[in-house]
Image (tube, rainbow, N blue to C red; front, side):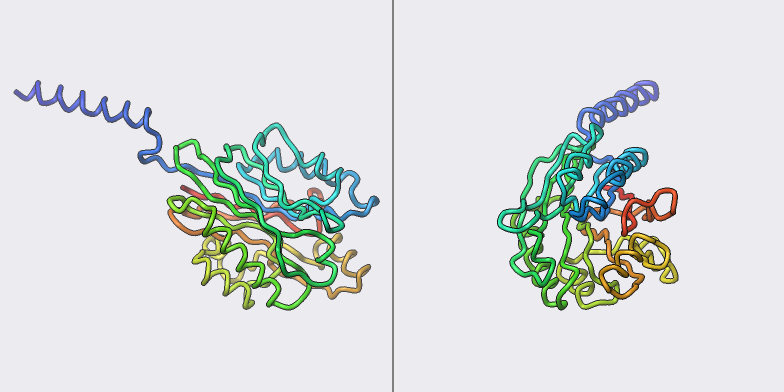
Length: 286
């Protein structure tokens, strides 16, 4: 009797193992790395020479699964911020009728099963030269689950009301086009401080968690834009008569069935400095 019972348990265990292999969507968590990076791809010929090529090589060496790029404004940038490692891609709004497009590009190792883009209605001063907006992709993960990812780049100039107006549009994009059964990551250069009205609006209205704050103490501010340690940021601010600032402007927010494992800054040292921003990378379990 005991022998037959043991045999039946063994067969049941083997059946469950095969079922798990054949149906990966039934339970296994998948770890995904997401990077957001403002490439400082300003459309000035003297600035878009070697940096793009080396930045893309550095991204490939790290190998995040999904990359949200900001300020890929120039044709050279669009050509060089591509890679065979990322066969799936979505760009944000194009330039017409503005001077340049949104500069937004999403690169993914995973298939894109749904996509949508929007152009912001509100803008101020020099931000109106580009056709800024947001892009949403739904990704099919190897474990059978899905992930909504929204990339964006909010205005840097103008009052907080401009950025909140843009966030309201992104919220509608998310409500209309995301897969409601899947978790969501909102990533990009938000151009607001972590103690601002826009920050609180994002956390409250999108019902998201701040991945950096989940994984670092309050004493580690995670500045992604630092005019005192980044010579590109400092030189640009001086040339444009802007104040020298040190702020966290780039974010990874998330909601739903997703857990933050860790977050870290990348390309934030002199040997690997390609932009006036540092890259922010998060590792998540889905």
